[in-house]
Image (cartoon, rainbow, N blue to C red; front, side, top):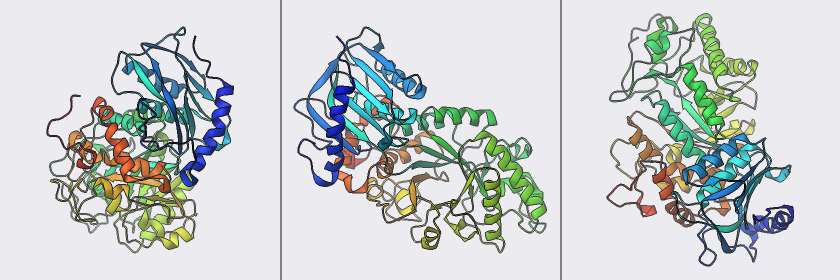
Length: 515
Ligand code: ACM
């Protein structure tokens, strides 16, 4: 008989889940640490660490098949669960003894992304939204083994989980060195596994313009053909980007496009020379490593602003993201602040909200415009005072083009000479930033020229970043993270991730794991 994972059982669990929420701060007798297995039951190793998790004695065993009972209004979660089961060789059959239920409800305490996961004699995943259920499915995936087994064992847990921050991101520079669509799909899959929900694509820079703009075809014909020395050139068609948007949405992820303006624009100037001031003589495609030398001719507003508006119109038609990144970094110009103000207003007129790198704080703009904090020492206090929401990417913690360890070949160290090791990234405390909406790790690609190199820089540090953004700071601890993350290595192997063999996780063995 399938165990009816019904309301009675679940209501009881609500009561102890409330206790478990308090447990993080105050202690609660029946709540165990997330890392402690109950008896011989499999341990519940989850990254990011849930807000509360109660582990009861015993385990749930099943083999071969499960019955699936899914709310029709949660298609993405259902697909994610079906993919998970299929990947483990588990069939779905209505008559199976073990039942997994995906249930939408109206528990306001869960917010838009929270969920409950209860393992008794069946599994109940519940949330207010499809995205909440997607996160529940990812937690279930982490509780399950990474590969097919004759028999599956699950710890008996009751999890209640909501994120600390609404923006849990990765910024990927596809402009210096191109990353193919297939790699972005894989990265989205892996991000979803750790409940990350923003992929910020840095689509344009001096070394390349990667997004097709139909009104200005030379942007990709010329700007898409260049790359940083040793890197990859290329560009995405609008159809490819729309496909990626849908692929991401199905995994609970929003793609935030960035067109970096008014600086970092040599690829645009090389494609359309009239965007440069008339006295500019260097209009060649660029493959070097310098920054801060190119700028749209802000003294020709009649040329620049129609260009910006036309480009943004096409960008917005591809990307439904409420937030649209317009760059704004590393340029000094008397008309810079005016550019930021005008562009923020333009994005607002188009029904979206601009986000700029921190330097954009000098613009006159509505307080809902977001700023992305990237220099640890930048004076962001005035912007916080005005109420601007912050995405936190301080380079000495979150610039993961810096080494996994000091002196790692092909990594930068301009922000922190010791690199950005896992423990350093994990130690970040976002709580002093009163208007923070989240965290975003950034992978710049001046020195990252292959998918494998990108994997090495991203993993496992991006998982640590996910926990910093999801789990409340007082609940987190590096030792616990190390244990839980180390235990997820088989999952990374099963996903084919070419991660850095992080000694802190005991992964420093010489041989690559089977894939
Ligand atoms: C940046 O690193 N220039 C945002």
